[in-house]
Image (cartoon, rainbow, N blue to C red; front, side, top):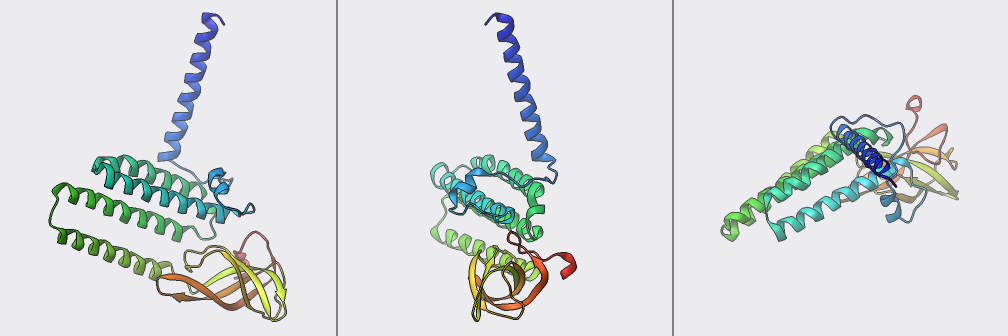
Length: 252
C-alpha cells in the first residue's frame, strides 16, 4: 500500500468515526421515536425465552440498565468515594435512559408509567448515592447515617405512593393460551402500572374464553409484593393475538 492509499484510508476511517460521533450526540440530545423495535442482543441472551415481544424486551432492558447503574454506583461510593465519579456515570446513564425511552417507548403497551418510574427511581438512587458520598467525606457520627437512610426510605415510600396513585391500576390484560375444563391459562406481560410480573397464570374460566383472545384481568394488590391476578373481568371478542396483550382502542 502506497502513501496515498494509506492517507485515503485514514481519512475514510476518520470520516466514518466523525459521522458515528455526530449521530451518537444527535441521538443522545435529540432522540426521535423509532419505527423499528430495539435490537438489544445482550438483554436477549440473558433470558431463556427467545420469543420476547418488543414490550417484554424493552422492559427487561430497562431493568438490566437500572440494576447495572446501581451496581456501578455502589462500587464507586464504597471504593472510590468521589462524588465526581458518580456524575461521570450518571450523566451518560440519564442521557441513554432518555434516548431509549423516547426512541422505543411507543413499543411499550403503556409508555408513561415506565418513563415516570425509571426516571424517578433512578433520580432517587442518584441523590441517595451522591448524598452518601458527600456525607462520607465529613465522616460524621453514626446517627447521621441512620437519619440519612431514614430520609431515603421516606423518599422511596413517597415516590411509591405517588406512582401508585397516579398510574396504578387494579387490572391488567392477558392473552388466553389454553382452556382446560374450568380453568384457563393466561399469559400476562409485565405491567408496571398494575405491579404484576410477567408469566403464565391459571384463572377461573369464563364464557367465550378461547385461545388467542385478549382478556381484562382483575389483580389483587399485595403490600411490598407484586400483585396477583384474581379473575377475568372481560373477554375482547373478535380480537386474537399471540404477541400483544393490549386491547385495540375500538374494543375498549
